Image (cartoon, rainbow, N blue to C red; front, side):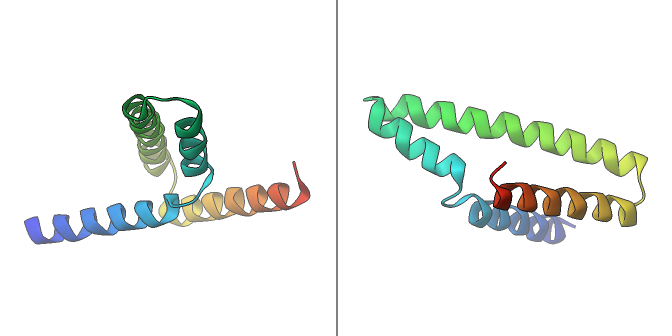
Length: 92
């Protein structure tokens, strides 16, 4: 049981790490670090901000999972992802 949990933990951690590298959050952290002469403050604020966003995502995702079957949840997430991509491409 512990081995399966570790495998799931590592899968989530590595996926999130790779997805977050060089995204707008990381670029914002670089920008703030250039402006604010206290890197520890920028780091702490970035960690707390990401943690809060992650908590909300997990709670919202779990709530949706309790309301919708997995099949429909996948369609919903895919649709939101596609709409976001199209709006980004159009500059909105």
